[in-house]
Amino acid sequence: MKTCQFLRALSFIGWAMLFCPPPAIAENTIQISEDHLNNLGVVLGKPEPAKQIPILTAPAKVVIPPAHEYIVSASQAGLITKLNASTGDKVKKGEVLAQLDSPDLLSMQRLYLKADSDMQLGSLSYQRDKKLLEDGVIAERRWQETRSQYNAFASVVSEQKQLLEIAGMTDAEIDRLRKTRQLNALLNVRAPISGTVMEQMTVAGKRVDMLTPLYRLADLNNLWLDIDIPQERIGSVKAGDQVQIENTPVRGEITLLGQSVNPVNKTVLARAVIKVNQAEIRAGQTISARIIQSVKNPAFKIPNTAIAQNVGKSFIFIHTQNGFKVSPVTVIGKQGEESFISGDLTGNEDIAVKGAAALKANWLGLGGAE
Image 1 (tube, one colour):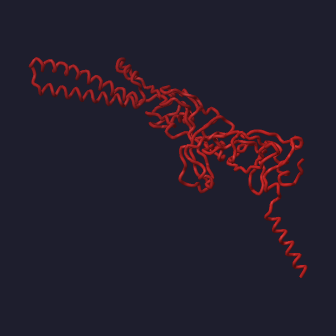
Image 2 (cartoon, one colour; image 1 turned 90 degrees about the horizontal axis):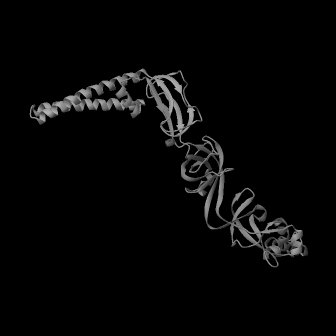
């Protein structure tokens, strides 16, 4: 009988120890002298207010927006006689990238000159019959026929000129052709935009057909970041969040969140637009991107060494006249050796940024205080 009573007493003590924490934890204060504080190596500092916090870091690929990429092709069949640009070169809009010797261009020029000659003859008849009509010499029917014929000539000239423009001739070159009447089989292929040559797709001396690709150009002033967000974290990311490329000053803004999950790596696409100078990155490059989010509630940045963990919770130590107050905080982000926290703080507190481990030992009753 006594043995049973003894066991029940031990059981009660065990339950009491389990549910009753040590006095230091219950009070959440640490009584400690300044001398002993120095011996523990405690360093004080203030929490730094933070308006943005890093949410996560994910792999990303630098891509060129489709609207900023162009294929320069041969507008006519011919022999490539000269290439003026190579991969990596920067070119300006209208700059001559290549020259082609095109017999088809000669035929088009002949048709244009013939149409222009016909229109000039038609113009003489037009002016003559117009005067005769005004003098009452000819009937109005004849004037209408002459005017209709002249308009037909002008329409053919306009058509042939447009074909030359499509072939790659400029207005100045067409005007010179009309004045000099000299045919030229050399066709200049010009850059449609100012940008960078991403790929040279042919070589000099090669015969090409119409629409054969010669160059791939891109405007690199605006780039995209295609970021792979783990599917379980996509809920914490939203359009408008800032993105920073690690180890560079380059920043962007998320403009699109994908609506499907990649079945291979279980990620969701988040696309960010880079709107500033991005000389530090290259199209096609795989990088590490940090997503940064603005916070509405007060948040602070402190060293990782200022945080003590206990029973799965985070605490910091706020300096008081008699020692330290143990204050619970929530870690809402991390970046390198710093953490971002929220809690009952104003930013004016002095906290232990070093020596938190020693204070934790005092708090839990694992060490003594003087």
